[in-house]
Image (cartoon, rainbow, N blue to C red):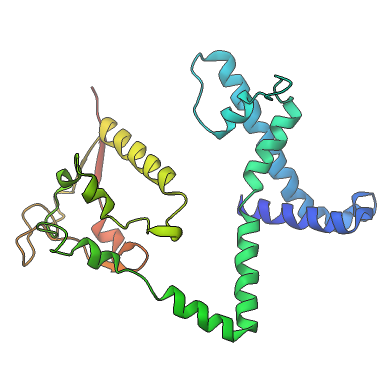
Length: 245
């Protein structure tokens, strides 16, 4: 999909700049990129077609962006989009924000490398940050901060405000609500439908393997923007069994 999107933007950009490439035999020159565009377009059309077939045989409607596009009604004319318009919106949904975002970052870095005086200012600014790990383990804010106690957040708005997982202020993560919704939905459905346990031969961690503070010992991790396990193949093993009832 990433290569399809990249080829699509290349194809559209070149053909927009040189319209003659849309005509044969000149179109042969852009055929390698045209294949990516055709693949993305076919995927968009197939996605809409699959959804139409699903709606024809099911009463429930999926709750997602594609369904929102299909159900959208113009507030003035009270009409829905045509099939071709829905496919075009679906294609736009697949393309928007991917190559454009990557290209923006590429040019930003390139320009900063060309203008070191601005690069130094950016470096100084981004290094002014709050230590998330320190803030979340501050005993002046949290009672027994090293103890895993999710109940501390129940009916406690102050505790929720003291979390800086998604940042704060003008730089707070714009996708935080979607991220929470996705994580909560996935985790709730996993716990609802599956039983999870650590393997019997996994003795490095567990409820009875304690650290120097008497709490269950956490796996080693690297702290950067996220806590990344040092050895995920060893420490992230899990037995997942689908519940029968």
